[in-house]
Image 1: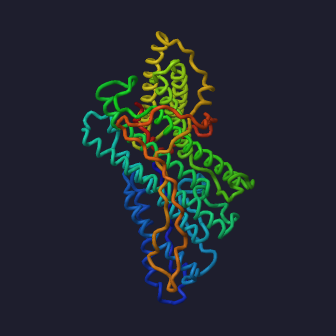
Image 2: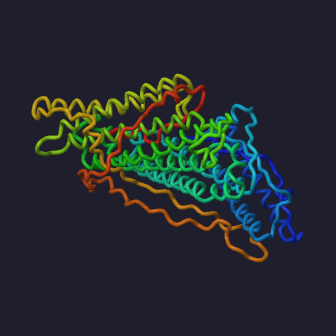
Image 3: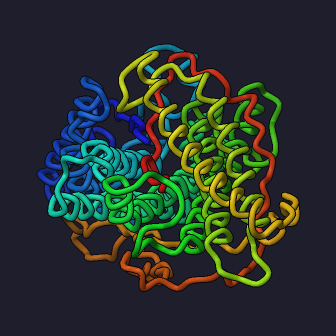
Length: 505
């Protein structure tokens, strides 16, 4: 999903800091000021063209260079090699994901206290630019797996591009995790949560965590797409969607578990966003608020496109997990037959897809598909493809069941209670601040020590038929409440396309 990053207001760093040596850091601060100006220029440039065409790589490069200077300034402040001219030091950033600034006027600037705030906003912009870079990369490929004009060699090149985009999303997830677990807690400890009630919700721990999970879910969807690309290409050149699966097709059980993990990531992110948004509205209204607000939440709520993206993403992931569980049951040669389970799971998948298609009616504009009515047609077609695929499998298994097996359709609650555990394809890439561009005259270590490494999930099996079959079971994942009445209607808001587009076979 393409999301606009926050943009800094201009400020002279030399006006905020005092160099007790009167000479040692004068040139360093001038260069740091230049680096911050380059970040502002690059981020502003992304607003002057449609988000998919913006130069996100230039923005990423500019922020990386500035982070080195910012790490150096923080190290010097801790070593008293630099001191603040006045306390509190304030920075202004234009918020992009909170609905509160949108109500206050076109400038949408929020004043934030402390150098920790500057680091928080910079890292948030960095993560969103990384995620947008991956989104633009994927959008440039189109549905290459099902295009008859794309050769096998070109598919291999595009698959590597998908891998690169997934890796970039894992980097973005790592930055956001570091932000939520290290930087924002230090900010809250330094200035107190009372001083941060007016910060936008995207600068809270909860929303930073939610965005990290959303990026990771998108990366895992790209891993699934990469796993399916060869099978998709074969299927669309030789057959129509439906049984039997083509030779070398990845295990349906594995695909179901991968989608269940994506579902859990979107679901956790959606819960965090809804909780902190409710607390933020309470803070805005002067009611104090609880939940996230009690832990130092911000004001206002997350913008509707993000909430809608998470809601629809979890619905699609759950539908596809049901679909692949149904295919797994339908393709098994077992005694007794499991066609009753297959038809039950496929009915659940069809129901989820139907609810998702109904939500499409509220869309106004969608990234990558144009505007207005044409945009709605483009995205609705993605859901329609999944519906047609699910119906093709259901019809085939029903015919077999009605003529050979005569199995009763398993009740939905029984099937839900049997759901396996999800399986991760990718994990966040650990992030730490880059080495300081300059150091205190008396030495000193980095202001933020590097985090411990994340646990890396086992690699996915190659898409050549050498995958583990069967279903080992595990803890169940319930359907949950997917009430999204508060998310209907976009009012002209913009939303990105799914990362899982086209993986319906």
